[in-house]
Image 1 (tube, rainbow, N blue to C red):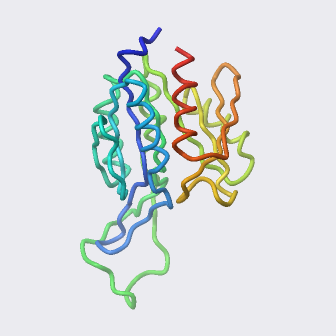
Image 2 (image 1 turned 45 degrees about the horizontal axis):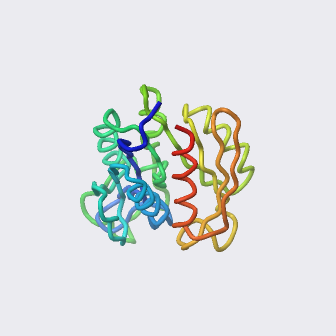
Length: 215
């Protein structure tokens, strides 16, 4: 049983960037707003918050400890270093699934560039750290464009999460690059919660409350 007054919460937020060359990279539309809203809500709950964030244009929530990173590999190493000390991991970051097999040290000129880029998978941060959890609660995020509940349940099981927060990125006005969100939350015991559409701050507060009430 966790003690709500001494919770240490590790949150990831924003995109990662997987560089092709110094001028180009693979990334996602994530702005980090959801992850930062979760960090703010967790701080307001009185938790100690470690926030690992990819490249974003946001001010860190007062009271949190920010660890800026760029690539999926960098995010993994920072999460790995902080995971054992945390009580809750919330993986809200939109981590790039692929990275170029080769990174060019200099900008590749357009007339010399290959039309195709050979890519390789990035490390699965959530799955890699979740398999070694002991006392921690692990919360994953699933951004899907179809069969949202099916893929969310699959991710919940495959990545050994306690909770999964799923959102339908095919819907306009919510999710990536907006100030609002609409999510469905599932836990490993079969519970389901539907939140939003509402501001990301409001949705974040509800998510943190649901987690707190589950202790």
